Length: 160
Image (cartoon, rainbow, N blue to C red; front, side, top):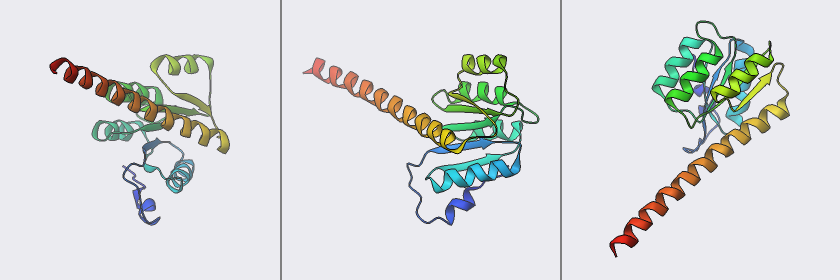
């Protein structure tokens, strides 16, 4: 397992509420570049280079966002997507590939991928999609909390 949290420790203070992101990318240089970019943007980043490592990390830790290469060794990005959605349904998954096809795009959407990006990544588009994915997760969490509080409020009103 390659964990790049050591990069964020050199950045000074790290907020506890920073989104947890897993980057599963076979290209080491791209993986490290994405990790560094996200860390300086305030994300807590974990990285790995193959499918079995990604599955292991997802089984042990909760993530807000998973960015996975479609063509990982050992377990492909589609398998990672399915595993994430099974264990962590609220996590957003973004698939990246240098060999896009309409079949994999449709399968990814069917399996619950938040987005599907083609390499080479365009920085602005990549960052906007990440921001949207995290914001979407936070809105869902907020909505869920609101529903729970409303339910508790109704229970209290019923007792009074």
